[in-house]
Image: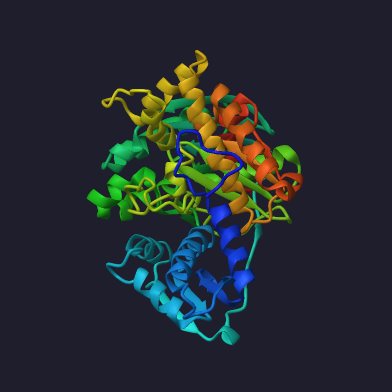
Length: 461
């Protein structure tokens, strides 16, 4: 695969956007057939995506399956759903059904979606003429800055909180914590409560609380989250009793104030939309994991899952496997502190194995601040990854702005990442470069902007 902008530390990188482009060109040259993928989620909402594939039985059956499997994976984690409807090729539908069967290649995805939507996951086939009809819903979110508000951002390496009075952040702090290592929900509860009380002490009163958190949130409940993974795996009863309602319970303890909890990626997109005073914003936060969020053309949240950490970024089957999902080439290993850590050996940087992931990231950032070219190569590689990923995301989102946030984008390394991603769009996808702008906010906004945007989530009264 010839790339116009290479990832210097990853010669085997096969970006999904280029694979998609080449596949569709090959199908067009030979003549193919249409395939529609439908995904049904809560309240009967259904997302639909149609693509051209090779005709069955023309010597491309394996190629078709590999392509559609990655496409279905992408749609599942961008849109969400518990019922997968394949309209068209029964051959493809049967292969996908096997992938998502109990014990199949995508068993993790099947189990995850069943838990999120509290329904059995299923894959069904229908003729192309009976393809499902799209049914989407979007709701206004945030931008409420009246009164005295607490904005809290729960990350995997640190937690951030802001006291926001009449739209102005009067106090912000970051505290290092290690939620992923703790199976006692009391650790999480006490840490969150401490942050809330600190912010509350900086204001005359608390009118509302807004929370930005990793994971899937439904009706202010934590359905699943990497932050509470140890609790869920080792203490599932505590997860059900304590974690799912952790934020609403804390709000009650603080005086039963209004609270709104949202996925951190959606809050990233909201922060960008507020700052830019525009719409069609895709927010990407590169921290402990990759968080995604989207504000549509009407300035609304779509209700899609937007879990970009599990969206394929690399078609290369030899790419690094994510320990949680057991899948290869997914965004979490390309757009998070894990990406920096995985590229360090290729750059010739030896990191202290006893250090935490956050400490390893800081070590590379220190080298970057000292002008070390090896560190610069890491950020240039991630920038190439990201430029191609933006082009791939544009196949599934109508994007005018991409907002890049999170700890990985801090400092000079973030600038290199940003410039390289823009270069990919200019040289490889010039039509997208004319439409899409990648934004790198200033340092203070990048690090605490999500907690401030989170404060705007709830309506007072």
